[in-house]
Every structure is written in C-alpha cells, then in structure tokens.
Image (cartoon, rainbow, N blue to C red):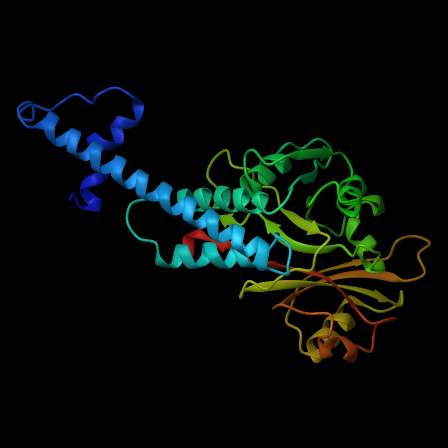
Length: 309
C-alpha cells in the first residue's frame, strides 16, 4: 500500500484535471503502471470514505429518533471542528478540512428536518449571503432580506431556522439595532447562537463581513465561548460605572455597546462577556446599576484563528 505522502505526489494531483500528466523521462516503462496503481489506491480510499459517510448518516438517523434537542447544535458543531483541527496533520490545508465538515454538518442537519437560512444583506451587501453559504452549505435554502426585522420575523414565524445578521455597532441607526428586540424575551424566544466567519485568516476573495447568527433555540456550549448580555440602565449611568459593575459581579467584559436613543426612557446595553452564561447564572442578580435583571441574549463559539492553529 502506498503511504499518504506518496498519494499526494505531484502526478496524482495533476490527475484532477482529467488528462494524463506528461510522463518525465525515465518513467515511460514503469510509470504508467505505477500511476494506475496510485489511482486504484485513491479509488479504494474514496470508497472507504464514502462508506464511512453513509455510516455516519445512519448514526445521525438514530440521533434524530432518540435525541430530545433539535437538529441545530452550533456549539456541538464548533467543538467537532476544533477537535478535528487539533488532530489534523499533513499537507491537506486546514481550511479544506473546514469546508468539508461544514458541508457535511449542513447536510446532516438537513437530514433531521427542513433547514432554511434568512440573511439580512445590510444595504445589498452580497458578502453576507456568501458568509451564510460558507457556513451553512452551498445548497442550503436561503432567503435574502434588506432589513434585520424581516430576517428575524422569518425565524419567529418558523419560516427560517436561522438568520444571519450584521454585527451590532454603536453607530448604527435605531432601526438597525436589531438586538434591542431580543431584550423583551418574546415567544418564541430568539437567541444569538453563532458568529461568522468561524475561521481566520480569510483568503483573498472570501467574505469578510462580521455577522451573528440567531435562532429560536437556546445556544449550546462549545467549550470556548462568549456570551451576550442585554441590559437596561438609567440614562445617567456611565460606561465606566457599568464596566466596573460587571467586573465586580465576576464577568470578564469585551465589547460594550451603549445606546441612549433620543426619547428613550432608559439606555440599552449589549455587553460581550467571556464564557458561556445561562439564564440562571447567579452573577446576573448582583448588578446594582440595572433597571431589571439582565437578559442573556445568547452565546457563540469563539471563532478559530488559523494563524495559531
């Protein structure tokens, strides 16, 4: 049997073009037979991979019949990809492994029920659609919308499973601050469950927009997460005082968005904190600067930095 390093030699890679690669001088006697053997070995490996994929699909069918949670498990998916990347070696590029498994996970999620993605294109920016395709599969049904409210409405109505929305910023117009709607905990309750893109650095031509994924399910922990808290504050509370209160409560803070919209009776805050925070986290009840108990708007698996992989 040929070794893995032999299988990736240049003559085999050239075979993908469809034509036989030119034989170097000195290979003409035994080269054709050697190349045929290598191709046969690739066919055997392809068949074995296919067999394993079909076995995996069978296990997914059993999970779908036995499991209590829905098919959407973004934290579990992130943990799978991280584990595979940690054991990966050889010349196959890590982004290729990512692409293979993202398509595989998209396909097996679809096996467990219909799956549709709603995308807010934020003024017609097609990169949000490209980012959704990259993460949720090239052939997954996708519906584009110009406003975040439309995309969220599709998730609330059950028309879409998830929505891809622009990453919030402090300078956006009130109508674009879609996260403030999640403070009300309407039914079905919508949570942030993911962040895109999940892999960096981005190759040339790849979508590089920053987005969050929302769904009508609670997020699941991946083992390396950040959570998003929604808070309502008196208008006079400063950013410094809020940060101090969060730190005193035991939260390690990241980005904090503070909105004091004209005519609003209170300030709205989106605070990013390290770790996976659940609704019953006791730290949420210790903040004395808020008007009501903070709302856990969701959590996401921290994206992978390929430069450190």
